[in-house]
Amino acid sequence: MKRDPGRPAHYHLVGGGIASLAAAVFLIRDAGIAGEQITIFEKETQFGGSLDGSGDAGLGYLVRGGRMFEKNFVCTFDLLQSIPSGLPDGLSVKEDIFAFNQAVPGSSNCRLIRHGAKADTSLGLRLRDMRDLLRLTQADEKTLDGKAIDACFDAAFFQSNFWIMWSTMFAFQTWHSAIELARYLKRFIHLFPGFTRMEGVLRTRFNQYDSLIAPLLAWLSARGVKFQMDTDVIDATVTAGGGGFSISALLLERAGQSEIVPVAENDRVFFTLGSMTANTVTGSNQAAPPVPETDSAWRLWKTLAAKAPLFGRPDVFCPDASRTRWESFTVTLKTRAFVDHMERFSGNRTGTGGLVTIADSGWMLCFVMVHQPHFRQQADGTYVFWGYGLLGDREGDFVKKPMAECTGDEILAELAGHLRLGDQAEAMFEGAIVRPCMMPLITSQFMPRRAGDRPDVVPEGARNFACLGQFCEQKHDVVFTVEYSVRSAMAAVHALAGGKAPPPVKRTDRNPLVIANALRTIFVG
Image (cartoon, rainbow, N blue to C red; front, side):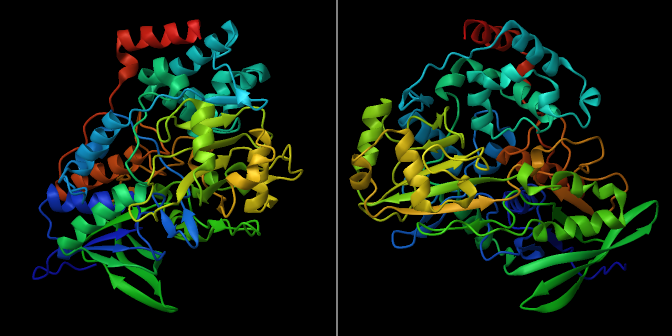
C-alpha cells in the first residue's frame, strides 16, 4: 500500500444504510472532508437500508418495519439537526420530529386485544419476576456471555402482560440474548411509567425513508458525495504490517463485472457489517413470500472475519433463519371504513395509538394504525397501516397454517377474525392491497453473543478502517435502533478523520428518581 501525496484522501463507505449516510454527514460537517472525496457503495437499488418505504397506490405501499425513537437518542438528533426536512416550514429533520410529536402526541388506549376486545394492560408480574428482572439488570455482562433470556426467567414470566408488551414492542424472542434484554431494560427505564400506553416513543411524520433517508440523500448529493448503487463489495485485501492491519484494496461486483478499487495509505474504509433486512422477500394478496436466501448479504463480513479475527464472528448471528426471522405486512386501503372502525374500537385518533398486540393470537399478531398520509406522495383516498407476526412460524387461529405460508388475503382474514369483524370485513378491506414481507435475519443482532463476537467500531490493530452498524460493539447502547448505527458512525469518524466524539449514552438507569418511578410502575402494575 503506497501513499500518494498529490492525491486527496478517499473515504470508502461500504453499505448504503443509515450508518454510512450518517458517517458521510459527519465526515463533511465535523471533519471538514469534501463531499467529492466520499463514495458510498450499495448492493441494492435504493439507499437507506432498513429505513425504507416504497410503492404506490397501484402496486400497494410497502414498509418493512420501523425503528423506534425517543428523546435520549443524542447522536441521532445531533445528526438530524443539520439536515433540512424538505418541508415548506423550513424545519430541520430533528425539529420536524419534535413538532410532529407535539402536534400529534401518542398515548395508546388499546395496547392489548384479547377475545376481540380491548384487554387489561396490568403488567401481571409476580414477586419472583420482579426479583429476576432486578437480578438481570444488576448482573455483570461477563456473567451473561452466551446466555439466552429464557435461562433467566421461569416459564410463567413469559405469559405475563409485561413480557407480551415488551417482546412485541422490541421484537424479543425467549431465545435471544440476555445481555441485550438487560441493556434494553436499563436503556429505556425512564419509559416505564408510560410503557403500557406507548408514551415517550417518538414517531416520524412519514415513513422513515421519506422522513429521514430522503432528506439525508438530498443533503449529501448537494455536497458532491458519490453514490454507487448495484455495487456489491464482496472482498477486501487485508494487509498485515506495522503492528496492525490495513485495507489496501476493495473488490467490487457491478453489472456482472469484477472491479478492484485500490485503497491508499491515507484513504479510509468504513464497513457496515451484516444486515437485518438482508434477503427480504415479498408476497402479494394471492401469494405468500417465497423461501428466501439467508446469507448472501453477509458474504463480505464472513470473508473479512475469515481473514482476521478482529472482525468478530458473524456466524453467531445467522445460524438458523427460524431463530431470526419474522414477517411484516403493509396494507393499502381504498376506503376509510377500517380506519374509522379502529378509531371507534381503540379510542385513539389514527396515528396516536402505536402498536396494538393481539395477545391471544397464535402468531402474536401486531399492527399499527399509522398517521396519514404515511408517504409524502401518498395518493388521495388511500390509507396505509402496518403489522407483523412475532411468532409467525406457529399455526394461525382462523387460517390454519403458519403466517409464513399465508397470502396477503389470508393474513387479512386472520386479522379480521381476531377483531371479530364478521360480515363487515369484506366491505372494510374491499380493494385492499397487502404486501407480506419475510425478513429472515431481522432479529439476527439479538442472538446470544459472547465477548469478541462483535468487533469494536475501530478494532484494535485497525489502521485505516472501521466497522459500522448493528453488529459492532458499543458499551451501554442497544441494537435494533437508529441510534446504535448513528453512534457507530460518529465514533468511527472521530477516530479516523477527526470529527467530534459521540456524547455518552444517556444513563437514566443511574437517576434515583427514574429508578423510583420505574419501581413504582412495576409494583403497582
